[in-house]
Amino acid sequence: MTGFLDRAKEQAQRGLTHGKQKLDEVQAQRAGGDLLKKLGAAYYAERKGTGTPEATHAALGALEHHVAEHGDGFLRS
Image (cartoon, rainbow, N blue to C red; front, side):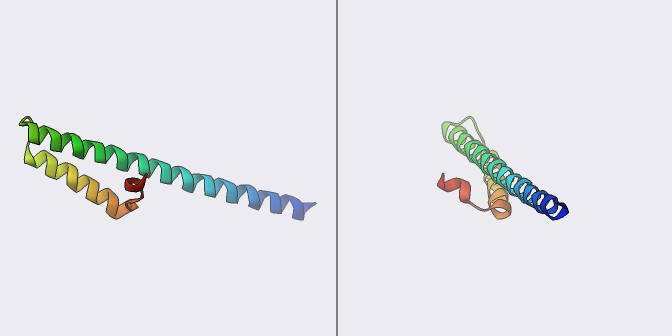
C-alpha cells in the first residue's frame, strides 16, 4: 500500500510542477504582450507628436530585456 501512495504522491507532484511551468509560460507571454502594446503606444505617441523618442527607446529596451529573459514566443501568438 505504501508503494501505491508513494507513486500517487510522485505523480501529483509532477502534475503540480507541470502546472506551475505552464502558468509561468502564460504569465511571461502576457507580460510580453503588454510590453509590445506599450512599445506600440509609445511609438504612436512619438509619431503623433505627443510622445518622446526616449519613451519609445525605454519601451523597446524593456521589451528586449523580456525577450532576452523569456524568449520571443509571445510574438508568434
